[in-house]
Image (cartoon, rainbow, N blue to C red):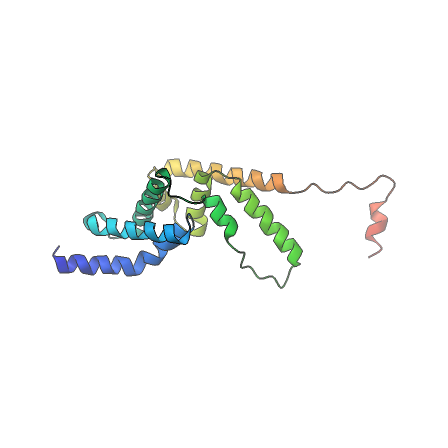
Length: 187
């Protein structure tokens, strides 16, 4: 490629995917760190422009961002874990049809269950559920085979389900001597 073509391709990649890479980085780190990771990712894009896949660059970009994030964590610059970041996100669901207390309790239970997962499990679930990557794309981000990713995804989902079940309160037992049938008919 000529320099003009390189600049045009890089500019196109940057415009189309900067916000996706920044969003991915923000899910893992504070704003200033996420911006650094995103900038380092696009520096890598410029340096390895010929290696960027033409058809679907997002998994490749996320993989580069992930490596930069892990490098920062290993060097001690990472401030908080992915579970901590998820705990900070607000729930934007429609609150009109349900009691606020129930929504808050449900949200807190879900966030607590998610926060109890390992960082690896959390990232696997985020790649597929939050970013909508296919298992093949997510496997590329993590640098593993699709088969390995399917196993990891299955296990992460299973652990999340177990964490959600463990957090649910058991129903209160009805004291002996109270007939529940007679209470139901009085409403």
